[in-house]
Length: 350
Image 1 (tube, rainbow, N blue to C red):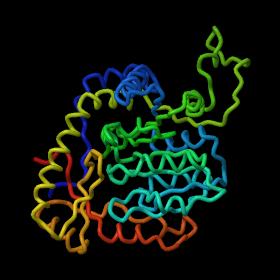
Image 2 (cartoon, rainbow, N blue to C red):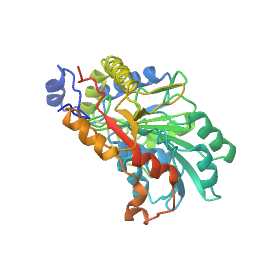
Image 3 (cartoon, rainbow, N blue to C red):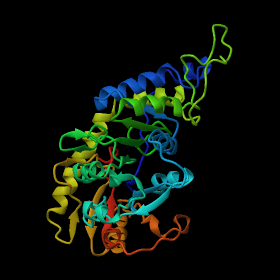
């Protein structure tokens, strides 16, 4: 059966050398990887972290969000996207999604914002970009920062621009095993604001300013004060090297997935009972190929019988008691979750 997800791993000719060098923590390969990401996204304000959860934690702390603050998020996000906000002590208020694409509904967002809202988390569902201009405009109108959750959408484009360089305050990406690029684990944070970026460098490293942390003898410098609460969240040299090698293949992998999407699109053009997920003016990375159907379970079974591992992928998070069991009516979420099916579209398909 053709799998829905599959990790890609390039040749790693220097891996053994790096493992034996002793230089395993944040180092030159991580820095080179970050520089390559800066070139790719055409922005200088990029950092990497050791996990996607750490990326969210660093983003939250950099924005000055505090324990007990209320944020707005989509219930259709992956748990890996929502749980970190709980561990940071945030209260999540769910916003309904567009029933045709699974991303935040701008109209519902306006209804959901309160005087307690401190941030808006905008998830781009399964690699399909959401209403970025509209959501960012609402955030600006209310003076609320927007975090683009790009857990599954590295390489997706919105109106010709890569997500990560669309004017959003902060963007986070996952570099987990089934993502592109795959660093086995890791995260990326991109800032629009230089001051937040500089702050994040300290926060991801226990608040330490490495330029003055040690004196001329290599001893910890008592003159170096620690003013920010931070994390041990720097990416290792090993993961950085993997990322560096992955970037050599990213565009080829994405183009392969987009070619597969064209084949699915042609197939479904003759299948009236299925509606491909569509985002006007957008170019998804096709982490999966999404369709809407009135017979979700039957469709999943049918495609699996044909050798394609179909799946609903995510389920609406607002059903979980860990989120205080909030069960308000979200009609767009119910409708999207009822109809959405994901099909394999990855680079591994012939």
